[in-house]
Image (cartoon, rainbow, N blue to C red; front, side, top):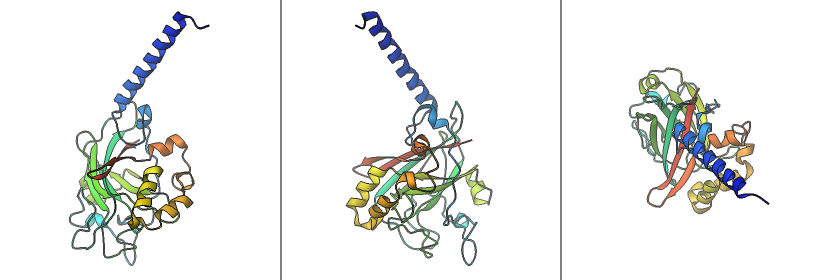
Length: 255
């Protein structure tokens, strides 16, 4: 039979462990992503750009570079800009990203910038599948806490890929606009349960639910090489906002 002394000892150790866990979470300073504690300080892995970056590295008949277009520095990326037409329709998403440095301190990277792009609800990418439109692309700089925000939509799921978005990290807005090489190229996934609910309820997402059934996160060729903890760090945390659609958060960590 367990003695009272042993019970008291277990309670003390349990409380100490919880306290230390809270300190570690505070040290990494993030409510972002599906990340917790010291794991938020692990460097985000490099991933492929994919075929539709529009950052000057590919395109036909000549390279397409949205970073040379007037108005690319913007928070709301749902509409086309610089004289192009079209607006991406879908479930609204307020996405907050935090840029931090890997290591014990998780120091915020103020002034660094992210160029973000994604497909629309039907799975198409502007400037490629939709050459007359340039929506769902934008560039933002991080504030003093390393945070930046995009107003977008929850992306659809097209054949062969799990729901995701792409991004490049630059040292600054100017670096991105003047052709400097990105410090990091990577991708973020979106959570399965929330995506399924959205795709099931909204006809604008077409075949997204069927495509998601065919390519779950663990079989996506970009994310499948990570373990469960690694995939969690690369997954946006989504919460339902009755007024605004969804809010998303994730941490991007530079080595």
